[in-house]
Image (cartoon, rainbow, N blue to C red):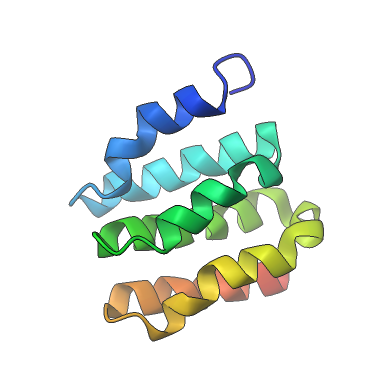
Length: 115
């Protein structure tokens, strides 16, 4: 991730964020969590905020929130300095129109709470 850079990583994986196939989106979320771990969570925060607030695609919102969940699972206590920002980024998902987005938001907040 460090060798390629954040812009390249985002450009490469961006089309998969709102892929109709949930398996592709979940794998993309895991990959972005590794990028966040390698490059630092703060570098990904603006991107995560934009994706989690996507008005075009519930799949993008779902994947963005799933990325935050995977970051929490991968990094554990290392997310604590960014906990408030991460909660702010995902919490609106609790009132999303789509049930899947509400569900992943609850699971993500639980993962952040356990981190």
